Length: 249
Image 1 (cartoon, rainbow, N blue to C red):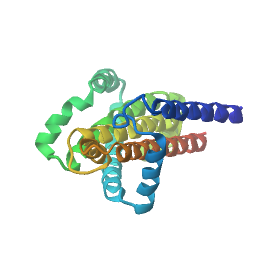
Image 2: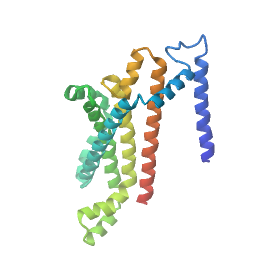
Image 3: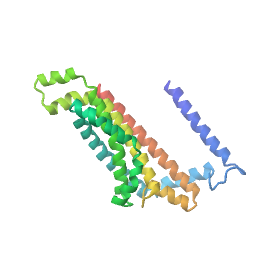
Image 4: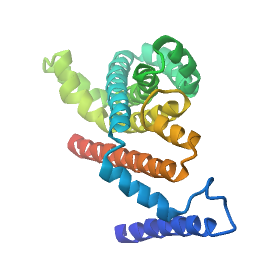
């Protein structure tokens, strides 16, 4: 089954590359708008061998790691505090869900005013994006814990810390990890997009700068790199989620 899935995925990738090549044949799409795949992959190889992308890559990774770490930690803490009583869940869970439904990108101009064009504004927006799915999934996960287990642990004299670490967290972990995966991936995409809107460095800024300088092959090479990085983050976070869920069982 997995082999069949991989073959289908490979077929789709080959079809996309073939369509790209066909569109760039002479007399079709202007190469300034869509450069041929050959020069693009050549520039992609140069990009990797010269390491010219490292300064911007490190900026983007730094922004994402800090934003995700702070946002996820805050989401876990807030989710746990909200889940302590049924009343706070009924009152605050709909509010958090309502705030989550508002596009966080609307806050980016405000973050620019407060934090400027540097990494701080991207960290702030990424932290906001990562916070809500982690908080909501933490509330949902802790709400699924069998209350019989909680009562039994308390009757045996378990402290609140022991109750959380040995009963509630393992039971809620699969749902919480799903929030981590969603928050991490969405935060990275948002940070990359905000770098393209207004930034002094980062992968998004580099891509926009190359486009403004009319260097389409290098721009597409950097886009491919950013896409592969996003895929790698998705695979890594999904792998960590799967391992964590197996451990919780």
